[in-house]
Length: 231
Image (cartoon, rainbow, N blue to C red; front, side, top):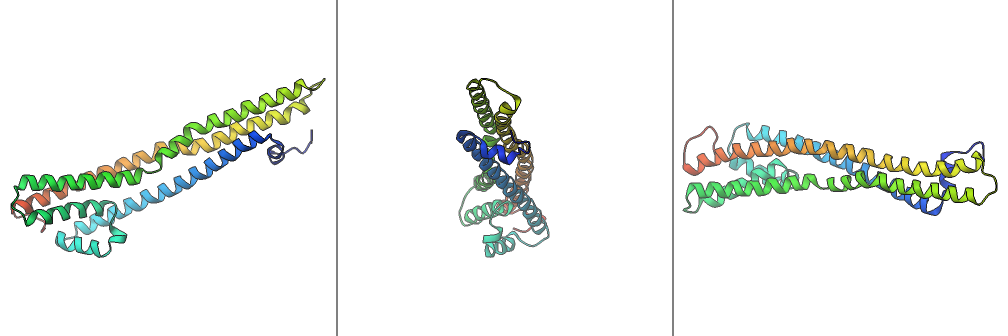
C-alpha cells in the first residue's frame, strides 16, 4: 500500500460501481445545497415583501389606490401577501356592480383570498419534497456503496494466499467513504427540511391573519358601514 494514500487516490482507485454511487451522492449534495440556498432566499424575500406591503396597507389611503399602485408594478409585487390582497380586492370590485347579498359577496371574496393564499403557500413549499427524498435516501445509497466496497475487498482477500492490513485497508476505506458521502448529502437536507416548514407556518399564519383583517374591511365596504379604512 502507498504510504501516502489519500482520499483522492482512494476515489480514483474505487470500483466503477462505487464511483457511480459517489457521483450520484455528490450530485445530490450539490442539488440539495442549491435548493436550500434558493429556498432560504425565497422565504426571506417573501417575509420582507410581506412586511413592506403591510406597512403600505396600514399607512393610510384607499384600497383602490393601493391596488392600482400594485397593478402598475405587478411583475414585482404580484406575489406573496400582495397577491392575496389583489385577489380579494378584485373579487370585491366585481361584486360591487351586482345586486348580491352582502354575505354571499363576502363569502366569494374570502374564497378568492383562500385560493390565492393556498397557491402562494404551494409555490413557497416547492422543492421540500426533493429535500426530503435526498435526506431519506442518501444514507441508504451510501450504505449500498459501502456494502459493495466491503464485499469487493473480501473477495480480493479470498484470492490471495496471505492477507495483510495493507491489502485490505484501501478497499475498506473506499467503502467507508461511500457512507461518508451519503451522510454529507443527507444531513443538510434533513436539517433544512425540518427548518423550513416552521418558517412556512409563520408565513401562512401571517397571510391568514391579513386575510381576516382584509375581510373585516371588505365587509364594512359591502354593507356600506363607515369604518376606519376607506375601500
